[in-house]
Image (cartoon, rainbow, N blue to C red):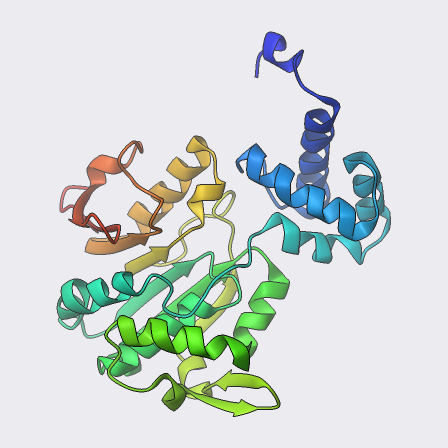
Length: 281
């Protein structure tokens, strides 16, 4: 940013830059490519949570108290998801993507930004219903280690299951969602048989590289929090990780239309934001 624009920064904007830089230097998490407006909203809530009057005070506590940063990560990263969120997306996968995935002896799926695991379990249930789970490996990644621990546990409040079940039904599910979990003490615990085909791991779309060749990437409602440069970086990772004619699923408010990597994909479903990698990509 040039000097003229810098001169118009508010104190809060300056403190935000310093906090993000401190997080990068101290903890090696890179939020410099995240959309500032979204970060500001979330960090104001974090200031209330920690009783801080300024971001500078929050930064000081973060650097001096080892317990603060893990809790702060819950504000820096968005942990909002559902099983079979946007059911039409999963219905489109069943109808347009699964028939092609069946042709592979082994299938690899990358759920990027998996949060607390809802998307990963949705994928596992879908693949089980389609008779493909035994030959499927799902990589579920996120930068929030606490969220990954919750995802690996596969435990969700029972009062959320009605919404999950309705999403599953609308997605074209072939079974009852209750076939895939056990209810106890107000919680639903998803089957270990689902988790054995999911690898949960930390991975940053801002700093890390491609780690595997996959047939499907699902990264939904993650890039809306990125600036354009970071969106392009993430899409470049997805392009490079996808096998020939592999598939990419994005969130309903996300698109590759103006990306530097848009020419690498054909649009398979405009409404459901599903794309297929071109042969010459």
